Amino acid sequence: MREGSLEAPIRHPIAWRDEDFYDLDKLDEELRRVFDICHGCRRCFNLCDSFPRLFDIVDESETGEVDSVASGDFKPVVDACTLCDMCFLTKCPYVPPHEFNLDFPHLMLRYRAMEHKQGKVPFGARQLTETDRNGKAASRMSSIANWAGKCGNTVTRPLMETFAGVHRDAHLPKYHGKTLTARAGDETPELNGDAPAFGRKAVIYATCFCNYNNPDIGTATRAVLARNGVETEVVYPSCCGMPQLEHGDVERVAEQARKIAGELRPWVDKGYDVVSLVPSCTLMLKFEWPLIEPDNDDIKALSQSTFDASEYVVDIARKEGLADGLTPLNGGISVHIACHARAQNMGQKAADMLRLLPDTDIEVIERCSGHGGSWGVMKENFEVALKVGKPVARSAKEKGAAYVLSECPLARDHIIQGMERLDDDPVTVEDVAHPIQLIARAYQL
Picture 1 (cartoon, rainbow, N blue to C red):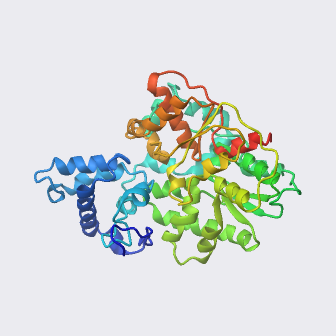
Picture 2 (cartoon, rainbow, N blue to C red):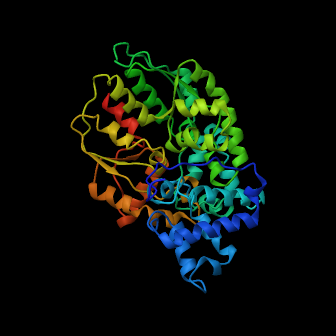
Picture 3 (cartoon, one colour):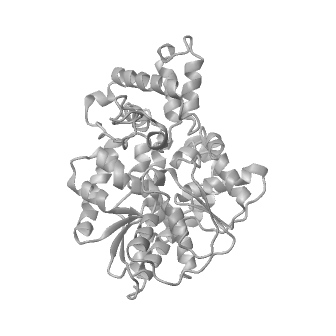
């Protein structure tokens, strides 16, 4: 090990099957060990609210050290973590292979797994994680579901806040009556046989969000890939389990991982690449699943064959070259690099993809939006989430670009809300959520 922990970070498998993983005394001992190191380091003070909370409770304790902090006071620190992985990947000098062996996000996950095992996850929060059940039901009555979820609805939003814990002012994604998988069954884009990448094949993992909430992202991805000669199929066995991971239900995530990997493995064996449409889901397939089920061959094969949507287009551009026909987009683009895209260690692939557009002004924002999946819409977190994301919102508003988007469409909506909160003025931007949709627009698809 070189001095300063200059080696590449290494993540250990998550020992969720071991009894010690849920042992309260051993968990408390590890929390105190890690928090003591964090309190002395403080490099992560500006990443999220977990670290200011930690430093405050230690500084205000009797001795000013972790030893005088009550174990029950650690919970607000855990609750503020969004599992974005940025402390592990960009800030912490003590991650493995350093002898201190710090993995703050996975320690927070361990705490939540203990809470889940003890039945402490609130009923409303558990219901929000059932994205497939909720999506199937809401898609059948999308107009009613979208009316109920609309900000400003004085009938339903206060009830949602009371019974599900969702802040009444938080933007919620809309539902579509025709899912991405249904569209894919009816619409097959024509392949461009003259494209340099003709012959590639990709199976698109729809993700729960793109299947139920924004199928336009999947449709745009298929259109762009077809223009570039890539044959595609859309497959959606079920949700990747990220919502359950946020609440510590690791066993449920493992079950989902085995199921989805088992259904996608035959496509991989037939030579198809796997393209995931949302970075959080891509991160699960690439990195989290192999740490949860390290001995599963299907998961290993899937992990090595999976691309994020932006990453895949850039891969085509670099290896074969894109098909001709991209046109400039006027008005400029502010693109947010989502934390779960950064956590994939692949670089700024959304920005790299958009820079393929001719004569188009691109501004890159690489900072946390504050959203954190379902975390940012909860009553106890919404205002904190806006505070964390305020620098992103300010940067986007000052730029005044026609397009404000993110690889994470939920983060994009949260940024728009933050922009509106800056001076209470409405924000006028194009209704485009994901960078791949701009590539489709530039191809006039």
